[in-house]
Length: 448
Image (tube, rainbow, N blue to C red):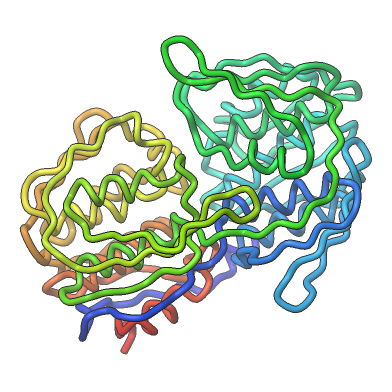
C-alpha cells in the first residue's frame, strides 16, 4: 500500500468565513518547479542548493526516486542540497519507485528512465494507478525504451531503458507540459537532436530550468501557431542553485477565497508569474476582480511578484480553449468563483481535466450541483450559472483523492450560505502543506 493511501481520511464541514480575510502570506513553493529542481539537480554534475522547495508529499516522492537513482539529497536548515550524478550515470533502483499521487513525477521520471540503460518499476497510490500513461510511454518508446503496463496503460509500470537512446522527433497531439518535459528529459541522454512540436504553448519551466543548468534550448515559433522545442544530446548539466517561487496554482485558493468573502483584502508574497501560468489571473481580471501586482522581479529565471487581492463584485466570463494550458489546474476553483458571479460563465476546452487526479470535469460539476449551483457539461465545455452572490451551499463533496477538488470545496464552503461537507481533506498536503493553517491565519475559521 502506498504511503499516501495510509493517510487517514479527514472529513470536514466548512462554514462561511466568520470575518473578512486579511493578512500577508506566502504560499508554498511551486510544485512544477520543485519536481524539476530535484530531477535536474540529480542529473547535474556538482552540488545544487534549492531554496523554497515545496515539501508536500508529491515532491518528497520525487526526492525519494532521485535518491533511489543515486543522487545524494538532504535537507539543510530550510534549504535542500543535491549532489548530482550526471547524465548517464544514474544507478538502477533496488526497489519499486512509489510516486504516490503525483502524475507529474511519474511522467517526467519515465523520460529520465527511458534513456538510461537500466530496468525500473514504478507504482503509485490508488488514484495514480487509474491514470493513463500511454501518451508518454508511446512516444518515449521511439528512443528505444520498452514499457510494460497494466491493462489500459496504467501503473504499475516497468521500463527497460535504452542502452543507446535515439533522439525523438514528435508532435504532441494535445498540448501537455508533462509529455513535452518527459520527451526533453529523455533527449538529454540521447545522441542527436530531440525536437518536440506543441500545438499550443504550455508551461515552459523545463525549458527555463534547462537553460538555468547550462543546456541550450531552441524554441522556434511554428506557422499556424505553437512552437518547436529542441535540445541536443547527450547534454551536460552544471549544478546551479535554484530559488523556487510561490506556486500560482496553490495561490489560486486564497485568491479565490479573498475575492468571494465580502470585505477581504490579502497580500500574497513571491508568487510565480510565468506568463504561461497566469491564465487564472487574466480570467479573474476579465471578471472584474481587483488584483494588483507589486514588487515584480526575476528569481532563478522565473518572473515573481507580490499580489494584492480585494473582494468585490464579479461578472461571468467566457474562457477560450487556448487558455487552458496556462491554468489547467485552476479550473475547479475558477468554477467556484463563477458560481458566485453575475451571469452564466462558459469554460471551454477542458478535455485535459478528464485525465487528472480524478475526472476533474465531472467532479467539478458535481461539486457545484451538490451546492445548489446550476451547471452543464457540453462536450469539453463547463457552463456555470452564477448566483450573483454567495452560492446556496449545503451539499456534500466527494473529492476522489484529489487535493485540488478538496481545496475548491473548502473555498465553496467559506463563501456559501450553508456549510459544505468535504469528504476528505487528508490529501491536501500532497500539494499544499499547511493549507488549513494558512487559511485560518487569514481569518477563515476552518474547523472552528
